[in-house]
Amino acid sequence: MEPLLRVQDLKVYFRILKGTVHAVDNVSFDLDRGQTMGLVGESGCGKTTAAFAITRLLPPNGRVVGGQIGFDGQIIVRADLPTEVDEVLRRPDWFTQLQPILRREEAEFAAFQAGGGQVLEAQEQMEDEFAFYTEITGLLAGRGSVPDDEILENLQKVTTQHLRGLGAGRRRRRREREIEQRIAAIRWSKVSMIFQSAMNAFNPVYRVGDQIMEALLTHYPDMTKEEARQRVLELFDLVGIDRSRVDGYPHEFSGGMRQRSMIAMALACNPQLLIADEPTTALDVIMQDRILAEIRDLQRELNIAMMIITHDISVVAEVGEKIGVMYAGKIFEYGSIGEIFEKPANPYTIGLLSAFPSIKGPRRRLRSIPGSPPDLSNPPSGCRFHPRCQFAQEVCKYVEPPMVQVAPDHWSLCHFAKEIYEGTLKGS
Ligand SMILES: Nc1ncnc2c1ncn2[C@@H]1O[C@H](COP(=O)(O)OP(=O)(O)O)[C@@H](O)[C@H]1O
Ligand SMILES: [Mg+2]
Image 1: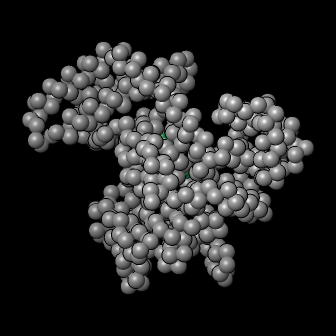
Image 2 (image 1 turned 180 degrees about the horizontal axis):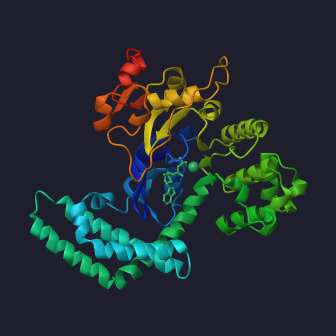
């Protein structure tokens, strides 16, 4: 049967002044109905970005540049750039040709970032820039088979067109965006997200209960206010907040209560998939355990699929059935929790496992992985983990590792996945 969520070769890039951030680079995974998956990795590895791509909440400088996302048998996200944006920026000779335009773009982008004035207009300009990059990249891809002169001529043509500004294109895109927003509203009720910064997720000037009611009334236009209020009270029961707090303001709630309210909000519209981004990171350890246990109970009770995002691999052991270990924009290890905790086949996972205390096993000395995740606007060559890897060999510096299947439900992105799995590799 078709999985509920299917992420295929997803690439999400951010544009920044000094280039392109490869935040998610060829990520693939599946999630079945009612299944729970943990997405784990150090901070800055692209976990939140992947979640934002699924929920269509990417900031304006972020783009899905490759792959697609299917939900319930339908494609909900497709790359809006067929080729890679960064190609252009990697070729210094062509870059020179485009200097004047790039400088203009930088100025526009800086203005956009400063946030003043016409945000929507700036957003449209950003879209133009991306379309423009797509064209350039397409032309550059022809290098080798198409004569350089011809490419240069086409580049000039495209550039001139771009500079004139395609008003009609903008109007069309605006219409398309309206349609997209409508689809997004439908989708949102099927996919729900608990945000990393739940502390600030509620507007401080409105009562928490009213904010959840608002979400309900938006998604169910036929619902009456009384019905919505009744549903909010039930949701409060469900997540363990006393009904008497329904008219409270966010600042009157403790951290744990705000987190629970966020969960209530996320569950309000009966989602089929719940994405929880670091749902307990801001809480103390006791509250963390309690909330995690409650999320797990709710997920089972309501039979919703869930993706838990965390930097703490021990959290995944508690709640997950399958796990994706993410590093530097890529999934490094993927499969069933039992398999991977028992026999990790990737040096990064091994590092993560030894950096967190085991929950059930004996206490060990904690050893964190030396160094830190790379700058994703300029990731290391070959295997992105090689500079920090205790097993790294010469090949790891130059050749991107393959995704190796080491067991029926177990994959590892490593040149030495099999050897590590079988325990035949000597480490340093
Ligand atoms: N709006 C943005 N613009 C530019 N870079 C971004 C933006 N958001 C995130 N990034 C970068 O993308 C990478 C992945 O970030 P993120 O998805 O937040 O990682 P994680 O959730 O695993 O900590 C990081 O290098 C981060 O700096
Ligand atoms: Mg994050």
